[in-house]
Amino acid sequence: MKNSSSITPVLLTLVVLFLLPVLAHACPLCQGGGTTKDTVTAYKGITALLALIPIIGGSALFYWLYVKYKNNGE
Image 1 (spheres, helix red, strand yellow):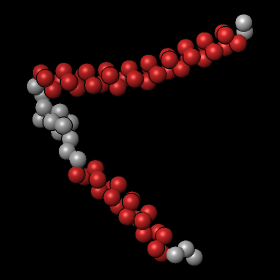
Image 2: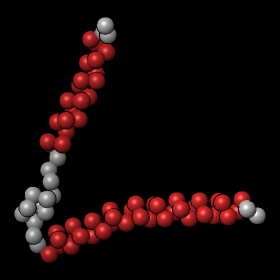
Image 3: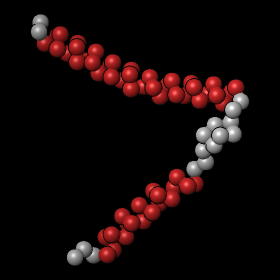
């Protein structure tokens, strides 16, 4: 059986990770109170940015693979 002192840091880490989100406050839009034009525009802008990040990353990966295999054929 494992020593209980080696389990203590793991349990402490798990407790901190589960309690940490409780300390974070959501933005006004997430809480349902922010329906001003500025918060809606910010929400749409961040949503578009977060949607474009994987598209740009995937495109860059496929372009890199395309160039790599194109240069191997020469």
